[in-house]
Image (cartoon, one colour):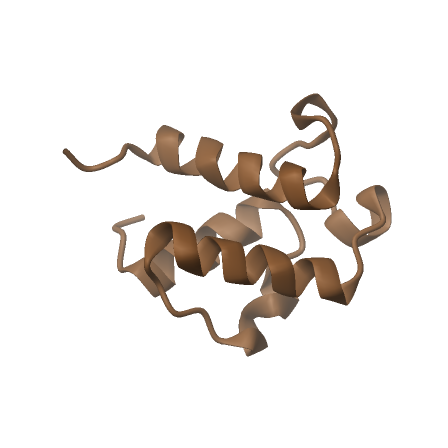
Length: 85
């Protein structure tokens, strides 16, 4: 059975929070990883690689500029994985 949007968003949030070492309660859909959660470019690449593994999608590193918050990450992963938005 296919995962729902909510399940996918939850998985993405768990991956991001794990890599950034922050509590899920601290992150909103629009909170900025770099500015609000001290993420650096290495962590961003780690997030990208983890998402590729988790969802079996290839994400171009040029998309990192859009992956500034959970909303952006979800959009990028959805496009890469071919999910309907």
